[in-house]
Amino acid sequence: MMQMTFVALRTAIVTLVLTGLAYPLAMTGLAQVLFPYRANGSVVTDEKGNPVGSELIGQAFANPAYFQPRPSAAGTNGYDASSSSGSNYGVTAAKLKERVEADAARLRTENPDAPGPIPGDLLTASGSGLDPHISPEAAVWQVPRVAKARHVDAARIAGVLESQVEGRDLGLLGEPRVNVLLLNLALDRQFGRPEAMAEGK
Image (cartoon, rainbow, N blue to C red; front, top):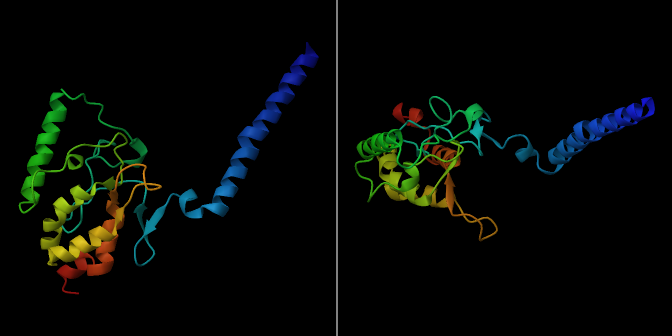
């Protein structure tokens, strides 16, 4: 009995060391060598080198001079990376209908010159609540508002947008998409930050 106990204890210790220490450390070290940007959270910095977010996590943009992401149900006020989740409302839920109607009314008010109907992904949250991408159609729909807020010709805004469209992975997986944070940073690089423009700089 004692011998079996020692064998079981040794097996547990070896397994713990291999799977709980050696393997995670090896994978972490390999990731730091091969993919340091991804391994460290895909952190995005501004022109001064200050971190402004992650390429993988959506965030809110309220300023009309910026493109806006999908709605978020992650956390109390949305976009909470520590509370990744969807709303879990069913398609017949009254609260979902109310939220969509409220967002639709807000979007129409904020985007009076937008072409056509509101794209669906501007009204629907992702399953994680933290999707950093929108469809190219959802971005194009917002171009008139962004151009007006930045006092820049819409064609120039559209040109920056077009340069930020990501294609399908490996040419066939997924759909074309636009990372909202990277797009807004590209606008700031091209035309300056909205605050600086407001000060006449």
